[in-house]
Image 1 (tube, rainbow, N blue to C red):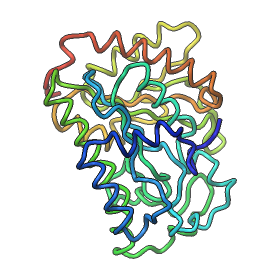
Image 2 (cartoon, rainbow, N blue to C red):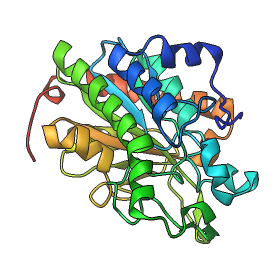
Image 3 (cartoon, helix red, strand yellow):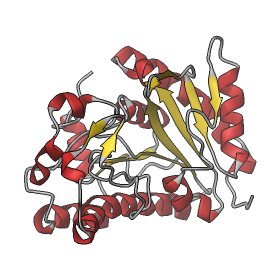
Length: 294
């Protein structure tokens, strides 16, 4: 499957990123390209916004959609082989998110740059936000960064993405009913030499309204190994979900699909169809679309 590094989006999607975005989001991207110290004129936006005027009460987000490094950071000192690995992005997550957005006619926001530039699913300042090594690979361009360099990364890549997520979610809240937030990720089949048996995992923190039905319906699918807060726990790491939905008392969950299931167009299509069908059933539940505290 073609990667999104430079950058694998279709011409139609490229137009949607710019021309169809709400004026404030589009202006933000333009400001970053012209005035930002790390995003050059030939670099992509720090976010991709799909179906900005969609009405279903669902927002899809993809924090680790891209392996792109801005030209100013010179590949962070890594070769192409390293940037092809899972350390740079969630392989297959971007096409899966786009396919889900099409099937569900839902809005989606995808991060435009590699998690190695800055991980937008971490609070800036978290030691894991900008890592110096990942799964045995040293990241030369991230070593010994000063406070000013760390701040520039956050201002250039992290906050513009989250600002657009916030705008998109707020728009859905205004038109009603209260929306849910779904974060789409993929995970490597083997980490640190340890195999990971799950086909898909659902990550969640305190609010069970979305996660529990997801787990239940997916476990009814023959042959699927479904993880509950596996291979990661939403109780330990759910920055994007907590920031935009959890803090507002709105349903949220992350879906993690194993990367070997998303390595081909056929695999992406299969999982998009499966997940879209499950999410469609869940979104019909009336108790879901309201504020609640857990």
